[in-house]
Image (cartoon, rainbow, N blue to C red; front, side, top):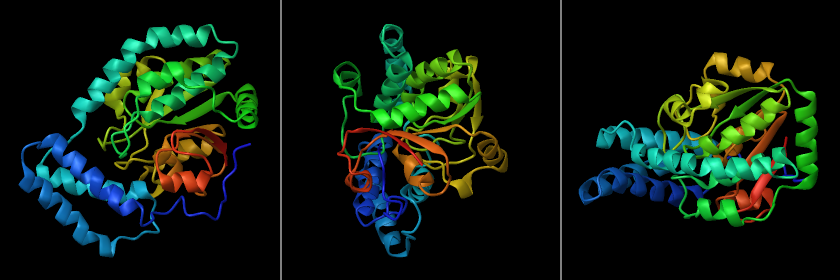
Length: 292
């Protein structure tokens, strides 16, 4: 079974996160103001000067939330990645019929839906690396740890309710396959999205575009961070987490925010950076299913 060292620093920000934050800031600035180098410089200088005061005991999503809030204020754009999110949702919806056939024809439809859902986690505007997630959908070998999957499948059999903590736009479309497979096994599903736009993370409008609100309950976690940072969550959402014994956490940001913070979670995500590579013991690009 996939295991991690509970004493590692995956739940904290590290020095390796700082250049990553600057790269994210520059990418965001160029995305909304491609020709305005003065804005690019202003954003980078603003955040670089704040590095000395950052609390690195906070998980990366908490600090990234501060970063993107500053950027949105400086460039006066509410949703800097709106077009990227829409393009990802459209592309995923176009692929969905073929992926549904793959799941239906699989020897284990639940495993196939879960694997596709995790591959969808490649769709991330907040990482430095570029991943061809469409190509990986058709070429990637099974990577989920068998012991972790067996534990997951057994939990599905014994659970009548599940809460999925969603991550990115586009990915949310592929998650509909997992939602339907859980429902076929008499498991009622609730899907959580971000309260406000942050990078390319899914909000309620993305859930509507994906049609997810038509097949299950969709709620907001209350956060404006690229991960379920518990102090940012609204009380109603935390009550829902307490009341739901089967929680599936999608994405690296949710892993970073919730590792050692909430027991009884299945983490399902792609390893996307060296920090998480060291924390999990698995290389960048690996599909991870872990139970805490």
